[in-house]
Image (cartoon, rainbow, N blue to C red):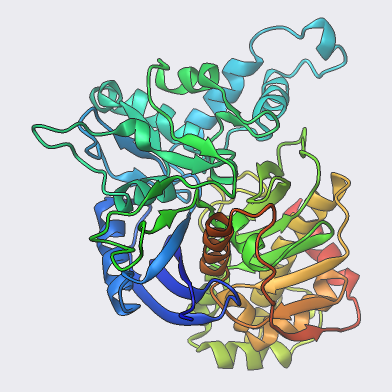
Length: 497
């Protein structure tokens, strides 16, 4: 009997990856990848071209029975009545909307406290943040979709007036794979065919994942109106559409189904088989600490975002804009490649001779400092060596992720196991220092494309119609151990403030 194939698609910041997978075992059968353009604003058409090229490299999708798309969260895709993209999508790492985030918070905090809010601070911004968190689990920061919509409304009013539908990168790509797009003279745009899942919707700033409802009143605060179409939010095992046969499923009786998809962080958690008690630290373009929680997370300091996951649980998450690019910056500063940077790091001692890097190269999201820059502290004539500087870069990367992990833990989230993934986890120095700085053993899954695996696993789930996703095996490369060095994180916190 021929095996059943599913495809997991990861449309990330940097590229689109297509992983054709055995639906029963999770074994990879074929793979393809195509790059995206650089920058923080991108024409979504590039994602479409990258998907088609990645699918071609993966041997095509004619024999695929189901597929799912995991995508970079928060990216704003605006469509007009015709289904055409109105302007380049603003991505999660575009910080131009930071002033709009502050305005949305301020507006929410303008009204005096209600009886139920007795005891809240008189500070308008603090009150506004707490009200946003109660409403949608998160307070606006520049990365969230709602702030980008507000930026367009304020700076491009003509474009704002044309908006008929708003979706996210993975929503848009799923919709295109289903055969939709700019309407023809005789057809409609079928904007009401847009669909998504609660994990990605929970990162917009206008979706309440506790009751699974859009907050059109909050969207109106950003856009100035609420007569727009938003993607239907589906459960994880549902079918959103069938793929256009010219794109996928041509050889499959009944065609290829498209599962709801999801945000990249939630898809990675699904690909890692994460359960309650697990936290993943992903070192990619951004750095992300995400835990599985059986209950919604409401962080009144607004440092942790209360996202949903892809299974019906929640995914409290703290994210840094600066991830593995910190290592890239270290290589550039020292004129070293990755192996040499690691070797230099390992020739220094914990604490880097007193040097600490605060690695906010592109501003920062956790903590929320969009206009910050990076800084090296504690440098003297005696300790300014290539070895100490290299170690300060590696320690700064891991300490910023320890910040994220501790914020999640403070919400009462149980952390029993840490999984380290992402391109940055390939560094020998990162692996050596991670247990010491994070303060516990670290599980290192075998290097793989976990967003694409999670998407494929969801596709297999939707295809089976079962109550639970298929039980695929997770390959573990090793478990990293080492003596804790709390003084390194304490030194970092002292300079970070």
